[in-house]
Image (cartoon, rainbow, N blue to C red; front, side):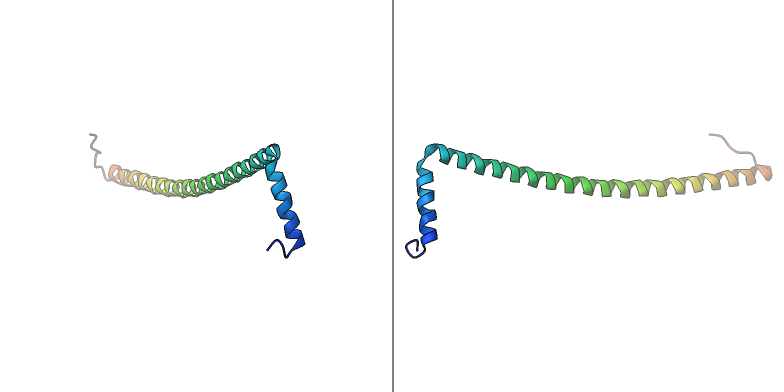
Length: 97
């Protein structure tokens, strides 16, 4: 295949020559290792960012649920107070435990 394409043949010769040189081969391996590590870090950052975003959504939902529960508790407390006032107005004494 390389015999039919001059550019490919030249590239093959260049790669062969460069791979023979130990220093250049080590530099190429170091560069590949660098790119692999950077890629891993980028993937990990994306993964952790997605997890944080999901946790933020969950936290927001839980906060909303707590707010709803607080509203219900406040409404119940107001109702209890109204009932206690009605009992007091009717002359029924409250029993304290």
